[in-house]
Length: 337
Image 1 (spheres, helix red, strand yellow):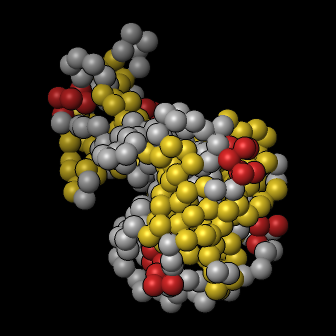
Image 2 (image 1 turned 30 degrees about the vertical axis):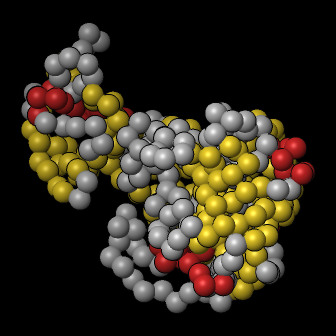
């Protein structure tokens, strides 16, 4: 987990951070009703996550006068096309600018489409630029929440992958999950989020991603160690109670364990449905509570999967927020991004 999944983003109210750790690389579907699975495998193991954007995301503009500012380009815009050619990476976009005195940019801003005309300029190295910092991918570590043995589908994180600089969901094009082993832990303390330090196997994909949503990332897993656990019933919202529960997490090596927590129901909205307080002495000793990388750790109560950890409170790492499993499954049933 990292302060905002990828980012350290503060929100109104208590300071908190998304419980996923990500590093920046050069990186809504129409509702479709889905039948809620009756049983899921609560996974709790970390994975490496690599995700590529659809188009390139503008994360900042150069200081002073620039072609980007003059044409109306803004931080948070997604550049989808340049002179009618689909933009697929930062490097490709830079190539499309070379030698062009004027380019037409197809841009997505929020839910709106815009067409902007920019006039690239040559920098001191002779390259044609518009004066915008752009990103096309992200990578990091997070935790798989569940696996559906009936379909091969999985969900992870319990929140979306957001850009560090703009706090926006990364516009999704493709991605995959990779084997990950936890090598070390930076313990959390008040005012400073801890983190899991993992090692990825970049040569192997465990599965593919198909969506990046505010309620989690979703895709399909190939048969592997992560898919071999026992399935448990899915709790309906009304079955989730204040009181004891466990979170299933991977905070050392490849070991997945259940740790004692206390739950408090907060509401049934899309996010922050649960307040999770770590009470397990072993986990408190190892991590200080909830740390970055644990985002997606499944929450179980009375033998049912009820949700996932999503955020840690920066001023008290023994506490964090969680999302109801019903909300994750609803998002998984929609074509998002």
